Length: 311
Image (cartoon, rainbow, N blue to C red; front, side, top):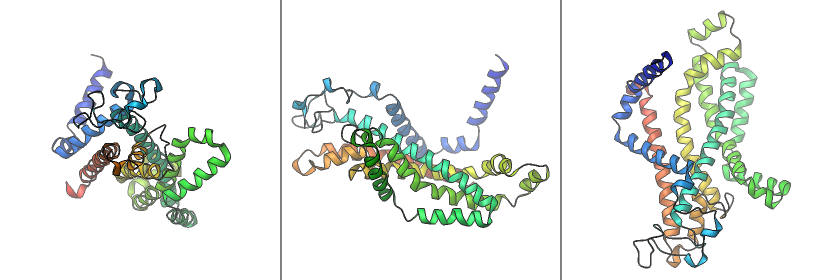
């Protein structure tokens, strides 16, 4: 065994024996939530292998298969476990592909919000003065713009600038931009508050004395010590971002029916809910509930596990 392999083995054993891993093994809720999220990630990364039918393959879709109930209901078919929608698509396959879109939008918006909020929070907390006041006033103004309003503005600008056909191809990046631009404020405020505390520590003064520049002090010394609350906030924001995407798609500002997300599937099923085709809306809604619940449970566990006051 090479030295690199031995070092990797020691790192894996160290991670497995850490306090965080120990707390994880003692939490059945966190383990179940992680397994659910793992299943969603596998389905999202490999939808063509997991989904029974490729929903974008028009040769596999037959309009005569529309509105077939779930397999266990009267009139159901074993070919469609959860039934079909109004276009004859297998609902289970549509949910799998839709969950992938919802997770991509959620993760992308969280990454964008992190990329904007964390640097601004570091700069505001470390520099202080007028720059701090300016960044915080911009954050206050941003809080007055809800995600739906930002999405309406971006959607209108994109339609006018790109045209209808090009606009539909860029709906996912537009959703990520709309949700990310409304989520960076929480990260900036959290990081700023932690930075105001950390910059008074002795290790920051020592770094300055040995000649470290402001950028190096913020990135190499302060940032690692403020990541714990940011990580917890990111898990909570991920659930919020997924719900926001579903909300925007439900009101018609998100993913079109030809490229379904969970919110789009719920919106399509809502049109048939009172006419008896309940499964078209109920199963995507339950999937959205399960996904968000798993993220929230994992976020709650992470918040408690990383809180030194609860150790």
